[in-house]
Picture (spheres, protein in one colour):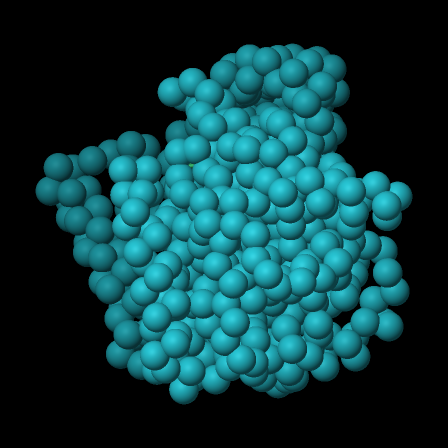
Length: 260
Length: 281
Ligand SMILES: Nc1ncnc2c1ncn2[C@@H]1O[C@H](COP(=O)(O)OP(=O)(O)O)[C@@H](O)[C@H]1O
Ligand SMILES: [Mg+2]
């Protein structure tokens, strides 16, 4: 009980202290509003945005492109990763190119993607999908290849064919790795969506941030940033929860926080 | 086919160092001048060299040897998981060139799928052989009951002790009713007490099922307790050095382990090992 309370209480305490320092430094150093807004002004912006409702169309727009792009990108990554891990020919033919593509910063592709897919939601979905692809793809391959060799020997000794080995052993043993990739992809997908909105959009949280720059409404910008933090946090937690649920035989691994 | 099989078995028999007076039952597993060479980082390494043996139908035979002498290598050849570099292994006269449905393997570690229940794990060979799962469910439960795991069919491996997991492994190797059971140090990872109990249980299983068992171990008392014959293997390169017939009466019980005859056989085997120390160690 006290354990639960403290995991809740301590971060809250830290947060309060940070807000206090924030507020104090504005007073002490006389920081102008357009550089660092008062906490209360950020709170006002959040209230205006969410309770009065200005933010909602933008948040749902970003959420929509992020979720659709995430699902498509991850699904493609898992499928392609599986095929490459299971087929020597495919791996030899495609892996070098995929690695080359991976070493390129994907955000640099944003303008090109706008040219190809237009100003609408399609280009945002593509951008998000591209961002999600690589961590999930690489983790799928690593997961499938790192299967316990003694389990493979066991399956082979009972005359199991490739399909059975794949569906009963490799997929499960790769699950933990794949979930680790899915978790990294949550944050990357948000980056993709925001960058695409920066480049060309009249909607979304990325656009909100850009629009607040035009009139130096820093409080507005902070409110938008907090929204991104919340979305990223909720998304990551959701994947963690699913990881623990799905990979029930490997719970210890599910609770490890993975960063790229 | 059978005639040819018997013929090769005779040759394999002649290759044996020590021939006993006991009548050999119809041989089922044979190895003739088998050799396995691994390509290791230090160049080619002979793990098994010129190994010949024959195991009769229904026999319980142990291969006894220090670790690294090539026991698992031979078992992998017999299981069809590894191709020999020379010679051949045959089951009822047919060369073993891949995994076969009439063989069941028990590994040193339980090697259970952690994401599958005990029952699902036990039924893996049935799925692999594309036999109807429903028809084998009751057999799975009977076998689990035999090893005292009746109430654990729905459990996951992590909820079971090491000994229980190894029992599941044994049931899995028996589920498709193979004629030959290959066991690679199945109790090596267990504590001494569990190990002794498992030996007794395995004897019961063998009694009830009348299967041929090739049992690999590095424990002298375990080999003597369980086997009809013990094949002593020496390392670098691995080959059968001696064969000991264990003529202790069956069924054997824990009391037997205290008898002088049992101690005498164990002592004799220990002495054999000490006679080739420069090779054995
Ligand atoms: N995959 C392998 N590659 C190279 N050498 C191996 C391999 N497996 C086993 N060996 C070597 O072959 C010898 C016999 O190994 P093994 O059959 O596992 O022995 P045992 O089961 O009797 O302990 C050892 O010296 C071991 O190092
Ligand atoms: Mg071994």
